[in-house]
Amino acid sequence: MTQTGNDTTVVIVGGGVAGLALGTFLVRKGIDCVVLEKNSREYVEQRQRAGSLDAYGVRVLDEWGVGEAVQGHRHDGSTAGMPLLIDGELRQWRRGGHGEEEGTGGVFCPQQILVRNLIRIFLRDGGDLRFEAADVSLHDIETDRPLVRYRDVHGTPRTVRCDVVAGGDGYQGVSRTAFPDDVLTCRTHEFGYAWLSVMAAVPADPLSVLAVHSRGFAAKITRGPDRSRIYLQCPLTDTVGQWPDERIWSELEARFGGPVEPRGRIISKQVVPLRGVVFSPMSHGRLHLLGDAAHLIPPMSAEGMSLAVHDADVLARAIVRQVEKQDSTLLDGYSDTCLHHTWERQAAAVALTDLMHDSGDAAYTGEFRRQIARKNLEAMLEPVPAPEVNV
Image (cartoon, rainbow, N blue to C red; front, side, top):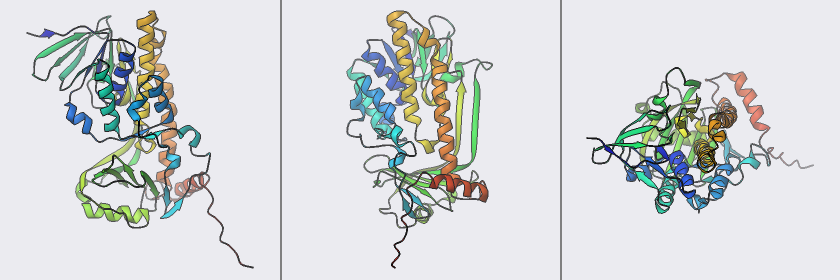
């Protein structure tokens, strides 16, 4: 027999940044919620993901009183502060350019650290977080009391009735499948190339380096004190089997224009096609999507976490308004508000992705585009000092 769990105000599906941020914000306002996460706590806290949070995201955490979640990581996380190598030559971003003002105050905080901290804060504040919740399904989302079914860690069927369901379970999650087929629209942009994404057991010093090279884009970015993520632009048709460990290190050195030390053990590697995705609307009935369940932003922008925190902030404020004042205005406008912001960030992300990749390997978009991209990139960089002339 299915056992019925205690009713709650909000059920949040997904214990990543989006779901945990939303849950933490709500609990701090005294609003009951249940977070359902399909994986174990150990898995979630160790899962290596991108780790950049923009100035807005940091400010949101501060405003909700959970700035401690990124404590110790408050060094500038803006792309403008990253070293840039062009054909092996170190260049500097122009002061005041490349979104520098906007990026100032952002942080590098590996996603697993932010997740770990949000879990700690959420549970400390009395939050209800249920790990290893399997077979989650959403029902009655067009009614006043949606129903969420799942199996707990022991395999026992459970149900929870609530007022609002928040789907923050990522691109591959189940929340979005609860939308009727004729309601949800998916808009996608494919860039025509991929990144070989590599996790290596080596520290990153500096924390992030970007490289534009005729062989393709490359980057090495911190994922913690003893982990780095390496990205190498490659054709969509490439397979992991074509990239043995030695080739990865030698290609990174070729695109960086010099030795890369230290080398270390390659933990994992995968070929990831670059694309942008936006689903709309982000709300239907009592179900609201947030984070990667609603959109994927090109990883070149490093804004996935920031978009997740933005969605959580907007949705939390809307739910608080509904609960405290019985005013649904913000909740009714949640989708439009978040989509407006999402498309703004997608526009910036696509422009940056095109710029950094078109400037390098002309095999993808041609020499004309490469020359245009190089000129646009140069306009964002400090000039190369003219050589001294002895008279």
